[in-house]
Image 1 (cartoon, rainbow, N blue to C red):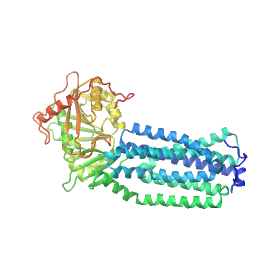
Image 2 (tube, one colour):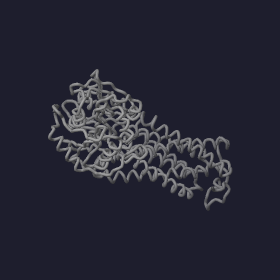
Image 3 (cartoon, rainbow, N blue to C red):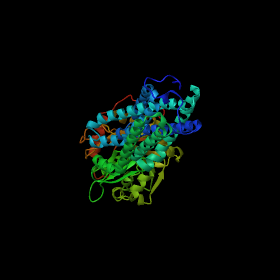
Image 4 (cartoon, helix red, strand yellow):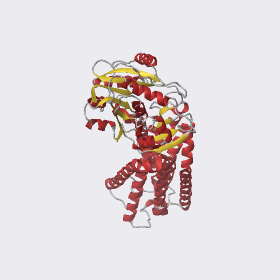
Length: 545
């Protein structure tokens, strides 16, 4: 820490060699500096979380993306702290400039990432490299600027009233950590649900530039030359203008970007609090596409094909009076279950009430699911599937259908664990069956066969099968770079039953509209040829996907 009465560099104004000349009492000045530390820390953490959220949403695999963003940012913070030593004799001007640049870079980062994602190749091509580089560049730049804040604030607070270095550090870091707590809580509970990522980041940048500018131009204005004051004021106003203009255009920008990503048939785009739900088409004879957090769940002609393959082999293997659907809030699996004679009750356990509401009332989605939620046999519970299974009645269901996101998505990893399947086994009747959507056999065979190994570890015998999709375009898996646009894709399933003998794969006397017994048998054989043996099971404490 630089002593406040250390010799100034040649040419430095006299005011830099002694205590700061403040318009308020020193105690008030110190309080205002700590308030600025608090605000800037909150803004900095929001920038970090915004980058992590966008990286996970756009590229999948949230653990990897969070690790990349946070490690690069922490590294850059260290470099920024070292670089701030060169600004110690210009602490007020340097801090004002850093906050202005940070507000611009952090505030616009979400919009820039989304723009590159939407208009440079989508899920394939350029997105695999260009935007990843942009993500790292933003993490590096924001980390450098955040790292430079504390040394300069330390210099400013020591110029108000010199105290021992330990006490000053304690005060600054206390304000910094409390601010980080507030920013960390504000992002998921206020900014994201009420403003969204784009407007939330822009508002954070606005708060950032106002806080930094107010501190420097208000409290430390006598440390600045007249030219420096006017320059900081002019640049700050320009940044505010840019952020305000971007916020005003955020709605139009988001709609244009959404159409660039999903096509021109987008009807509904809703952030439910659990995920982003986008519905495209589904009315006026257009095929329905359902996207959850940017991932195509089902689309086009495959809306029916996927769910027929998921449901009917499981229901054809024995009793099916009572059926449990884990996930499946869109009601499409329930539609297929209700088509079978002999079904008396269908329980749906879905985490997202917003998706269930759309499945009930959206004209396109409710028509696609055959108005399943209007059937008195259907009962819905809003809950996490793992937690619900822990308290469910034993041996209650003839069939359990796990219509869940792909195992490669970090948030759903626990739903493909040995513990999860052990709980699912408890609720199965003696002749019960469990069917699991386990991701693509072709593009993600390791994940698919890990699910199979996990089922066997939980006491199931399994019959693997796959179904090829007819429509092309968006890959349905967790990774945005799963393959070039237009590449064929498939869905992999595992039909399982407690015991050592795998359940038979058959449709019986029931014939779905898009699936035949011959096709099912051939696809099961094709899936079996890809088998990878010797894989360990995935558990809650040691996920393998």
